Image 1 (tube, one colour):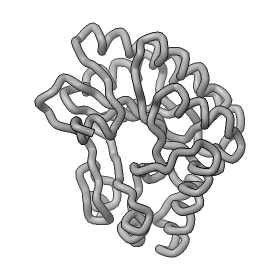
Image 2 (cartoon, one colour):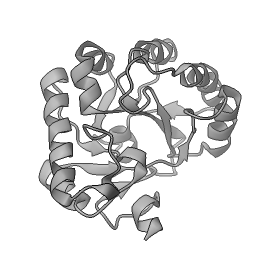
Image 3 (cartoon, helix red, strand yellow):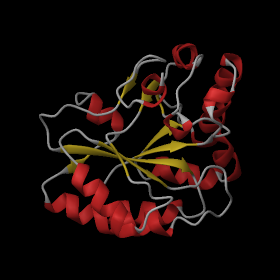
Length: 218
């Protein structure tokens, strides 16, 4: 059961991907829990290196910071659904899960003009009801190949962890927010991105959004 709920390759609770094809030296950099007041710092670093990313946004944070949410899309990055309330789905009913995802979809679309096609579950936890919600909202789940633990580790540890696990087609997970907290401290994430991008680019990797990584012809 634990693998079904949190296993990165699990599709028990709905269609999901955790990496792209291995035949291209391409990575997808993703961020969860945003937007936050510090998301613009991440956007500046990505722009400096011309790296596109996918931001899985929480509807409640989008409602709180709509201009920053729009700035993500305006900068050419993709926006995904990370639920509205960032709740643990294993504590919620199928109906509540669907309502939470629907509310996030509607908020993100209303504030940014983007209707997400990709969904990442809070804490990576899928549960009964997620499959139905994804089907009704036309969402595909996204897990990760490597996660940085940037909410609890030092920047050098985050960089070392991600760099060691980067490989062709990998989906990398960091966080530009901290759940629904206002003005979260994401200095570790900002510093990790600043250090990590030149390392991976020097290794010959390029970056794409999750959509382009999974479906290169789109």
